[in-house]
Image (cartoon, rainbow, N blue to C red; front, side, top):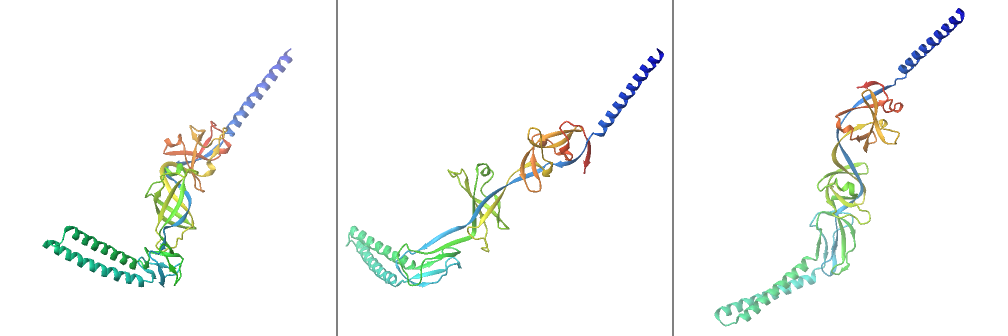
Length: 346
């Protein structure tokens, strides 16, 4: 009987010791499996999202010079592709008949002037009626108008450059006979030059007249200013036309080049973080993991810009804080609510 009792007591003691040892192992395992994460502090700062629009360059002015009188071209003083200052004479239409017309009208004007002077003198002396005086005045004014018209026709035989520009194309040759309205040359003004594009409904709300803009053509950047925004959208695309004016003193920018317009939008507060810190929760939402009361917390975020070197982000929960601690190492091996050991990264 005593032997049986001893065996039972020994067995119970062995089981107790085994259970106690097992509890110690579990405690050790729990201590050993507590994860470490590394966090870094990020500061909120001002950020302006860049609006990028694709467009093309175009001449600020394009004019077709046309003949204003009939006649044969007696002198041609321009070549296609050359630049000319405003006022430079480009072409002369034979003025011989125009000169004769001016002389004819000048003689008629002198005659009508003398007739009017005589009628006025006789009217003052009472030998001429007011009706006759009025008729003489009308004849004089008609002759003056005809003389001035002949002078204009003579002046129009000289075709000059209307503004500093380049001859883009020529439609005539020396000796050609022109009729009034015939095209002579196409001139283009490249300084300033315009860069045109379209903006959608969301983008147009952040664009205004006289706003600074940058234009990228090839690998070169140019500073410009928005000088036009259409008041109505395209009925098919619902987009608005905008135009940027760029100084082109050296005429390096040609018309028709593919361009990119860069405009800074309104400033907002955001955090700049490496793209590797962004993760997904079980619901498929994007966000970052922070430390709150030594526990992991998932915060949903909105990516407002991808610079290629990182993301500008904001969040309703994060924007309340000037600084935030985001997990930069170990975030992929933790779950929300898990208690972790934190290592600060300075």
